[in-house]
Length: 317
Ligand SMILES: Cc1cc2nc3c(=O)[nH]c(=O)nc-3n(C[C@H](O)[C@H](O)[C@H](O)COP(=O)(O)O)c2cc1C
Image: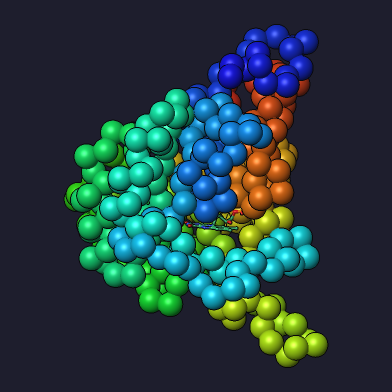
C-alpha cells in the first residue's frame, strides 16, 4: 500500500518523506507494532496490511516453549489493562521451523523480541537467530514483569542490562534494540547501561507493574497476582521517560506506552523518539497502527512538513 492508498487528505502540497533511520535500522515510516500485541503479523491480515508499517515486532520469544501464566491473564483497568500473559510462545526451535519463513514474506521489517530467564538464554537466542536474514533486528526484552525468574529483574539492574546487551551484541551483527523497563527509579541509568553495552537503539517503555483485587471474592483478579499495566493510563509516564532518555543519551529511541491515536504518536516523536510502537491499541482495533500512520501523514500535510525527521525531538522551549 502506498501513501495514495491510505486515507490521506491530498489537498496540501508535497508528499512528506516518512523514512526514519535508527542507527543501522532504516524504516520506511516511524510506525511499528509493539511486541505481544500483534502476534506474528499474519493474524491481522483480514483487518489491515502489516506491510504498510515501518516494522512489526513479533511476540516475545524464549529458548524453551512457554505455556504462560495461570489464568485469568487480562484485567481491564481505568484507561488501560493489566496483563500477565507470561511470554507464552512456541520456543526458539519451533519459531525457526514454523515462523521465520512466513515472516520473510513481509515486505516490511520484522523485529524479533527475545526474553530470557538467564543471561545464558539471551546468548543462545542471539547466536541462533543471527544467521536469519528475515529478521531485521532483535529487541532484547530485559523488562518483562510477568515471569518468575529473570524478566524484569534484568531490566532493573544496570549491571545486568550492560552485560546482556554486550553479550547479545557480541553474537548478533544486526541492529540490537534494548527494551527498557519503566519499573525503575532512574530510567536514564538503565539507558546508559544499555548504551555502554553497545545497544544500537533503545525502546521504551514496557508495562508498569500493577495489580487488581476482586473485593467480592477477596482474590487478586490476575491468576499471577501481578501484571503489566499498559494503555492510555501509562502514556504520561512513557512520554516523560522517552523525553528524559532522549535528553541524556545519544541513541535513537522507539517510544511506546499508551499510543492510541496519531496525536499520541506525534507527542512521542516531539519528545525525541525516532519511531513509535503501537501496543494495546491493536487489541481494541487491529488496524489502529495504520490509522495512526494516516493521522501522522495528514498532520505532515496540514503543517507542511516535508520530512518527518524535522519533528523528531523538535519540542519548543
Ligand atoms: C497482551 C500484551 C502482551 C505483551 N507481550 C510482550 C512481550 O512478549 N514482550 C515485550 O517486550 N513486551 C510485551 N508487551 C508490552 C508491549 O510491547 C508494550 O511495551 C506495552 O504494552 C506499552 O505499550 P502500550 O501501552 O501501547 O500497550 C505486551 C503487552 C501486552 C498488552
